[in-house]
Image (cartoon, rainbow over all chains, first blue to last red; front, side, top):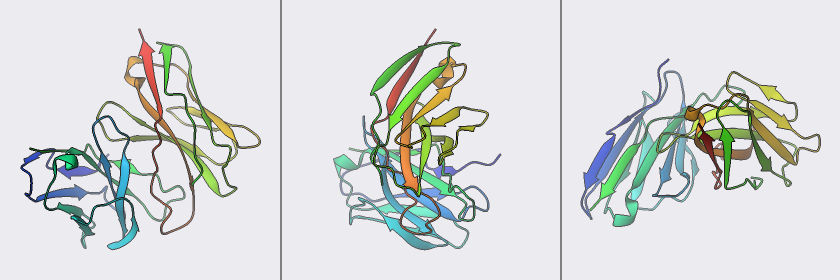
Amino acid sequence: AAGVIQSPRHLIKEKRETATLKCYPIPRHDTVYWYQQGPGQDPQFLISFYEKMQSDKGSIPDRFSAQQFSDYHSELNMSSLELGDSALYFCASSLGTSDSYEQYFGPGTRLTVT
Amino acid sequence: DAKTTQPPSMDCAEGRAANLPCNHSTISGNEYVYWYRQIHSQGPQYIIHGLKNNETNEMASLIITEDRKSSTLILPHATLRDTAVYYCIVRPLGIRFGNEKLTFGTGTRLTIIP
């Protein structure tokens, strides 16, 4: 079965640079979520989109922005990168019309800021 | 969302049943209990969810107490591949916007011992 695809899988950037992470949800899934997991920490919710509209927002820095496109893929844009942004970034997708809103996670993008 | 409490770590012998407890004494009537797990640095994986009845699927069983203040995830025949961090999450269902994110606590680190 098709899964959530994230690209790139690994990314190395320097401080103050920008990064763009991409997420391709499971076909027919209309909701996308972004989570950040720092070293030794638990995943923390950043932001979500339903039908291309922002549906919820967590502790996402103002330096980050995201959007969901017409084909339902999503991009997380990160500017003025800081060392503390080094983390695993997970994207998850779900089907809004399902009964349980189960979220299916991608393999993550490991961002390293040097 | 209701707060959950889980033991930080547990061991289980390979082939035995792993029983992971979760307390959620402040759970509301419209909140479901979800279980996810995260195998080292992989994306979290949905396991099972329930409201008040016991549930079983191909991965696990979920036992929810009658007062719904606690639950137990049961992996019937644990294998080495079940070594992971297991998260018990409580969240409402059926609300389209603003309540779909997963709030991960510290979870239980389950180690399956050969």
